[in-house]
Length: 96
Image 1 (spheres, rainbow, N blue to C red):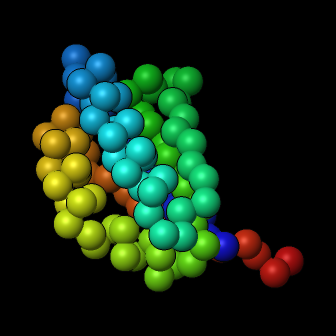
Image 2 (cartoon, rainbow, N blue to C red):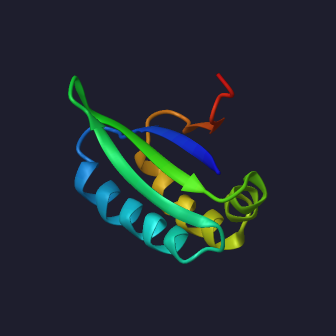
Image 3 (cartoon, one colour):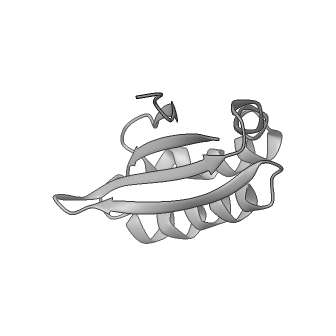
């Protein structure tokens, strides 16, 4: 299993519109092969900073979703609402 950390920063005044569209992205991801679970958190010190933690069965499953046409279309609605590029980090459990 891997975890994918996705950080996004929403442009001022677009929080509500962002939340609606971000929910669509997560709803679609849930139905993708290999998706296990996910949650989105808000930064207490920066309300426009969102962090999504998603658990995937494998990096191949994540890559398939990341490069899919469905995600590309959904992200085309989200990207204009962000004032920074999203940051994606793929994590795996340490052997230590």
